[in-house]
Length: 151
Image (cartoon, rainbow, N blue to C red; front, side):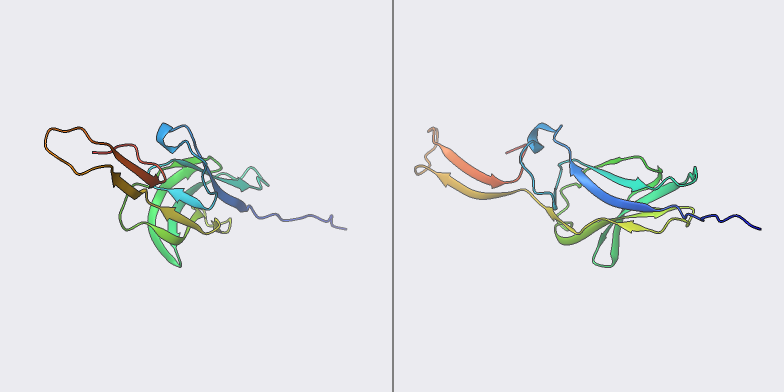
């Protein structure tokens, strides 16, 4: 008579990101579904670790059903990865997500929830009086997100 046994396939789940506030100009309250350009996030995932399975993974950025770019190739499996989206003028908007791929093709691919990539922008600039050469004047501004340099 044979014994009953279970075959367990390795799996990846809970692919998500958390905001990292270690950068001074990114230390503000952030929406969990938005990645702000030039502000770091830590990408992590769970692995069921069923059977001492070892592999490497590729982490990719997707929009809709189109791969946008590789975030990292051959990352050690089950290791969080720090990510900063640069201030590209084209990588902004909605419907982005991360996808993680097992390089051994055993565990199924996993995707994060959909998120927005947001660019910092000035929302209001005010000059208190007309400008004249060699005079001091007050200029005030407000901005959406984080701006670390003003020229």
